[in-house]
Amino acid sequence: MRVLISGAGIAGPTLAWFLAKAGARITIVEKSHSLLPHGQNVDIEGGALTVIKKMGLMDRLRQFNTTEKGTQFISPTGQPFASFPISKGPGRSVSLTSDFEILRADLAAILHEATKDLPNVKYLFGTMIKKVVSNDGDSVKVELSNGEVQDFDLLVAADGQWSKVRKQCFPPDSVNVIHKGNYVAYWTVPRLPIDNDWWNIYLALPSRFMSIRPDPHSTIRALFSLMPCNSSQEKAWLEASKSDRQTQQDLLRREFVGSGWQAERLLDAMDQAPDFYFHEIAQIKMSKWFTSRVVCLGDAAYAPTPLTGMGTSLAITGAYILAGELSKLDDGEHLSKALEAYESIFRPFVEKTQQIPFFFPAIAHPETAWKRWLIQALVWAFSKLMAIPWLAMKIGDHGYSENFSLPKYPSFDEGDAK
Ligand SMILES: Cc1cc2nc3c(=O)[nH]c(=O)nc-3n(C[C@H](O)[C@H](O)[C@H](O)COP(=O)(O)OP(=O)(O)OC[C@H]3O[C@@H](n4cnc5c(N)ncnc54)[C@H](O)[C@@H]3O)c2cc1C
Ligand SMILES: *[C@@H]1O[C@H](CO)[C@@H](O)[C@H](O)[C@H]1NC(C)=O
Ligand SMILES: *[C@@H]1O[C@H](CO)[C@@H](O)[C@H](O)[C@H]1NC(C)=O
Ligand SMILES: *[C@@H]1O[C@H](CO)[C@@H](O)[C@H](O)[C@H]1NC(C)=O
Image 1 (tube, helix red, strand yellow):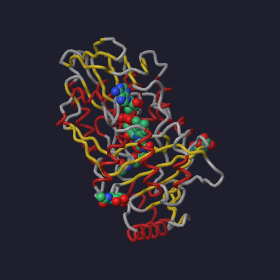
Image 2 (spheres, rainbow, N blue to C red):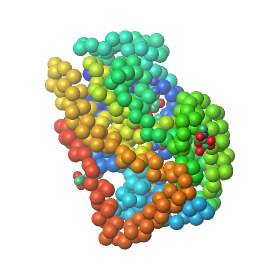
Image 3 (spheres, rainbow, N blue to C red):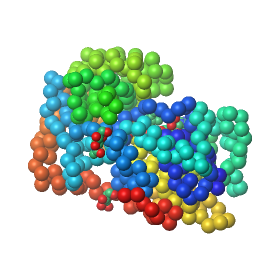
Image 4 (cartoon, rainbow, N blue to C red):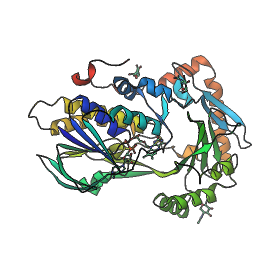
């Protein structure tokens, strides 16, 4: 089987690893010229962790842990007032930091490293799919940006939330983009002696969120988020999300300067950051994940937003299931059977994961001083409750109960790494 994957993020390389094991020949095209340094902490939960174990990458993952001790909230006067340390074992999920948290770019690098030298995997960086020439029962023909025209058995869109392949192959009315109301910017900041190893969260007025967290590279990572209060502000932020870096930075500076805590220090580090990244928080929902021999995977098919903390886990688990179903095909069986199975097995879990409580992200973006006071009081009370071990255990267990039981595939189950 010849498979073309668009996108060397998280989903693409994971799929390539399993497909290679099943004997397929894989080409991955990636738009950027090298791996991107962008992105911050992503969680790897439940089933996705099992997939990483099957790939034998647990040690690499542990090496790149973010070293975060937990989460703490910073008061308007700049002092921590409520903390949620990571606790091992039950009750851990209330720390907000998960046990297996890693920077997106570190994970992408680990996955690339695990696949780049496989004999049947070929990476083409700085290359895109220019055109899907045809897609029918027999093959999918594409023209690449390097001018080559090639036939494949399967084309996988793993090119992220704003997938170009999806755009070319699926009608607009089959793709639903759901705006969640906030805009987020991420960048790296030089570390100072005053910095600590907590995820520090500060709520600024009106409707602004700032945080810094440690990383394993001796720098710290800033995250700013804003939820527009009215339509003119909404318009400015939406336009900036489609504009260039300078426009985005100017807007951030204008809207966050003077909003308290370490706003100025963090804003001042923006210009020099190698990884400035700005995006609108939106979910992707498709009425069907495949058409003939083109299938969507990861954020391209079902971006859940960072509000769920599940984008990476869905990408990894989805890649495993897609590869598994393809590996089960008998000689001469049409691959649509595997695509059907991938969607029917995984869609219920994806839909559950994409449900975000109505008060998110508003609860993290209070508009007024009294709302901020109320939220902070609740957070404080909760932190006190969670300091009581038996209660933490009860609440923590509950938060961790939602799970997905990974299907088993003969091709991938022998020789599991511990
Ligand atoms: C720069 C960046 C930063 C992110 N930061 C965070 C974060 O801090 N926290 C969080 O929870 N989630 C973040 N995400 C989202 C997170 O990576 C995904 O939710 C999840 O990992 C799913 O991965 P994916 O492989 O489906 O998509 P992605 O990780 O988005 O990977 C898609 C890949 O496709 C490439 N690509 C895009 N267009 C094309 C094209 N036309 N042709 C070929 N290749 C293309 C991209 O360069 C990228 O390498 C970020 C995504 C990106 C792209
Ligand atoms: C969820 O997954 C974890 C890790 O794989 C496992 O230990 C736990 O038992 C699972 N919980 C449920 C309710 O299935
Ligand atoms: C996290 O990473 C650090 C530094 O790379 C390492 O010393 C530590 O042992 C790791 N922690 C775990 C739990 O693996
Ligand atoms: C919209 O909200 C912003 C931020 O709170 C405020 O500065 C601006 O004056 C508001 N504009 C209108 C038209 O209400």
